[in-house]
Length: 378
Ligand SMILES: *Cc1c(COP(=O)(O)O)cnc(C)c1O
Image 1 (cartoon, helix red, strand yellow):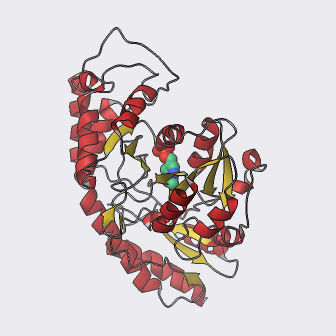
Image 2 (image 1 turned 30 degrees about the horizontal axis):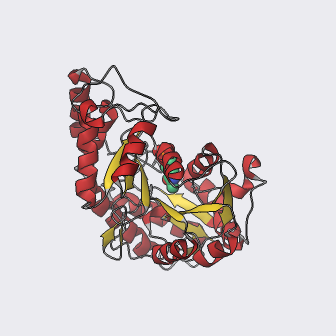
Image 3 (image 1 turned 180 degrees about the vertical axis):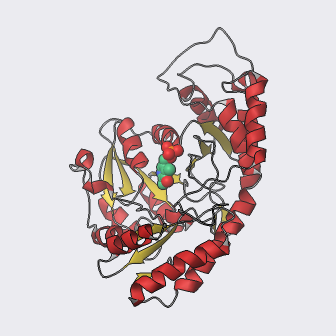
């Protein structure tokens, strides 16, 4: 697929299995939330090997984060500690719950939130910490959970990058307080748009079922038979966050390939790392990719040459991306409380995302790596 011409940063894999799943869902005639949503939730629970935990599917990763924050008890004026080096969806979700992000620095090795610096930021209104596994590489979860326990905080594990990653042998999402996933167009598996939460109490499941359906106390098990009730009560605020059958059907087909997606991406990342190992002016991810489900492959470009490298690659038909502009740089968030962000400042000027696709041909990785090697030779 596309071995010549432009190489995009992301290239979702849509096989005929996915096209067939979508057609089947359209032909079913029940386009809203229904049987495919149950199938997707069950499929994800089974992939994660959940025992005492439950999956609730929603329409985006951002909605999943918003609902996770509500479950965590975030109310107007409360604070949520997050790395400034995170997705804009996390910051907006905190604002949607009425809360304020508090920007924390990251570690130089895993580029996840720094637990010691997070502890210093805890204030009287702090309710939760967001943990996020940049590029699929796990952050310091043990320290973060230890801190949360000592300080009585909830942990929201934004696992949008790390579906399929293992932390100390256990799949991310299978051991958390609240975990959230995204299945947006470019994530490791896609529903076109979709998200999910994993929670550990049936009470939270029931709240999520109401939250995602405009607050209605519709029975999910009835909706999962492609049916609905016409009488119901609404007892609290709610949102239009449910997942539709079409999107869920795409997710079901993608889940079946997840293990292959993961292993093919691991191979591509290891090849990148092997080929780029000798290049002095870049720092590679600090990971062997064992047990890691790589969402993106990034390098850190030293010597202030990131933009020059990106422009050179672009001229050769190789797209690159930047994940991310840190939150504290945005106009909307400039008032937010923050600690020392020196690692964030440095890293965010250096990171460059290289193309990474499921089933990526080794020749593509070689072409990209060679271009980078040539750039630093010249
Ligand atoms: C993609 C992403 C989100 C947002 O998910 P959407 O499905 O796009 O709303 C949140 N956090 C992280 C880390 C992400 O990568």
